[in-house]
Image 1: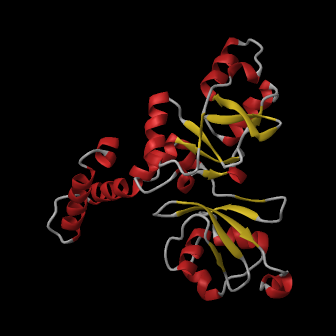
Image 2 (image 1 turned 45 degrees about the vertical axis):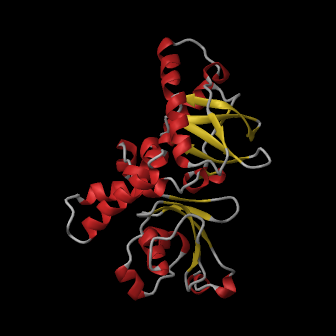
Length: 277
């Protein structure tokens, strides 16, 4: 991949890929839709930085290094993640990551184990690092997780090798992705963090009716609502406001779809929710 995107013949290779895509658009090419999308994603990849694809700090699932082993097992089972960052006291003091393989080995041996004894190294990278460079680095180091630090050394986000590969091939769904039920949770600050697949019906059951009858007939999910408001698939960090006063911030998205949202309610006097509350 790096040969294609960054070598001596980069301009020629880029032009060749663009020509292939243009031929397909005009009906002259022989590429399938999947191949065309793959090439287009490769072209875009070189211009993307780590902070374009990272999971933001607020959404990182991590464990404290002194977490008892039974609690660690329970946490990994609940979150359905194969790797979790490990920190000391605060997330800004990361000591490494824990891998589910090491947890399973410890469980099978029935030998008492402390989390600190099975911590593995992970990469620490800058948010401006090109995605291509990080992908190459992670492959060379055989690491699947990196934490993103800001200019002051604080943790800004997290990236997995799956996130990087998805930038090229699209969404990679595993058994957990397919079976997971869309959900939303209310945060301590009063906002609601929601899967974009959450149905409008379920969401209105929680916050009260806020859509018009016409909207309710045409829109099934929160993600669909936000796309309807924007007239396109909005990017991570964008915020859109519904006439009811609800604000929808895009927490996670790719060029094809929205994945997660943060919902904020407007003051009651300005919100249609007040009429139903």
